[in-house]
Image (cartoon, rainbow, N blue to C red; front, top):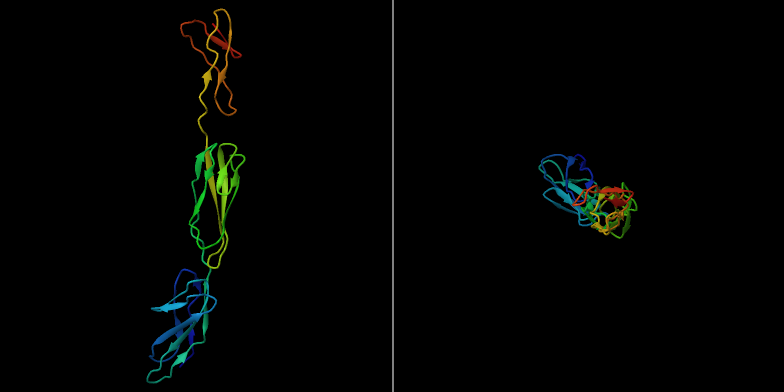
Length: 220
């Protein structure tokens, strides 16, 4: 017979390869045999080659004899299952509240590659990680980079996510200067509140008239 050649192209781990050939002569049927190369679990079923790891499988095609031609086999051909891409990486949650650390979880990665997290400031300041716990020293956004190392079957991958720390409600404000004698001014004081925002007083007449505030001092 004419030379028989396995023509299947390489593929990726996790997929199957449809076996093809060229050459040969006559009407004899073509069968395939396989053995492990650097891959493990190489097998053929219904003309499809699979493996349980990345690497090479050694495939030989044989075209049977018929009324006019003797059988012929191809040379043993190494077909490669290349390392596959990682799955679509996902990071959750991507939002929380200032003052409360966010425990991050990574999903979508494939294989056994080590997963690591790094962070940098976006609009927030002081973004930092302790293990998978993300915190910041202000509200705003932190950038988190998820990195997955390569392993025997999957390529390395990275993805960047934005995590938001939302502003939170201030502590309750209480006016602590509440009475004085008519004709005397009252220096206004308070407790509570949070953060560094400016404190501004406003006043309206109750049963008194002419209520006004100047430089934090109440008069009527």
